[in-house]
Image (cartoon, rainbow over all chains, first blue to last red; front, side, top):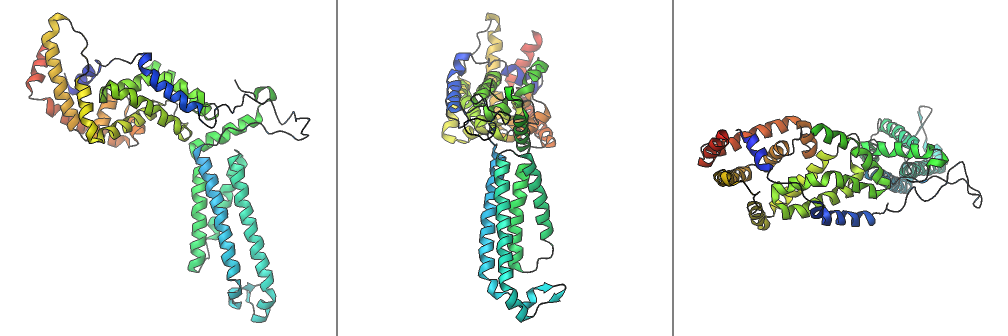
Length: 220
Length: 200
């Protein structure tokens, strides 16, 4: 008899537990289930669909969404963090905009003169603010949409991340590289979370729920 | 038997996924797997400790169910992995380790037939030798050996349960088997037990 057979033989002395022995453990699990935030929030309650708007509200009603799993929640948090980082970046840019020198800017391949720079400084500031606000809006929009299980947002986020990667090319100053890398790494972490298996299942399930016919939206 | 268990476990992933929206569905997973997880824990730490750890295992699994990889239909390796971590954590508590060993030794014997008394006494001695051999193994090696010998998980399933490569599973199993064999070899109890079981 070898050691594996001996181990198996001795293991057979331990029988399966009786249901009574498992009772306390099951009760603890039941208590945890009862206090879970998703408990009692089901799909069972509302019989509403996008096809049958609530007449009293006059607006189409969104079908209930499954709760987002941790990776998607983490991705959304990272995106909100990205928006916060972009706000800080924007403030720093505006703070230092007075220090921009003529040789920092080119137009049509020609370096601008100091006089042209003085004339263009408000335009540069406006463009910086506009660009910053667009970036912030994109971060927030993507964070909200992925949290709602919109698969297009996951794809668009990935595309935007790809564009942000291209943006890394051609950076020179240490400050630029630092901020760009910080933003890029935040985006990378968010995109990675969005493509994890649990996230994929969530987006698939959210899409299936949205595409269900009205009669199937209610719970079991 | 094992195939039946596997097909029964085939929709574990679907149950876990549905428990994201309807947490009460997770109880199905408990009813399906808790007896086997409990028995594994009882074998490793004694029944009293198993009563507590089986609850901890399922509470931990429930808390992180949204991180479950739905690509794996069978949730048993995941649950055994959590249970193994909890047992090891428990063992690391030096103050309680003594109690665990006592509980394991004090496990009530299955009543035997009268003419098996001698064999039972020797089996008890073998159990003591085996327990000592297992206790002397590094935790990682012991986990692999017991999941394969007792729970009959495949190398791939153990790899998932312990989050280690399959190659590491093989090398750990080989090392654990060699050490256990060496510990058992040469003991009087082993020779006697072998003799009795061969003559039966």
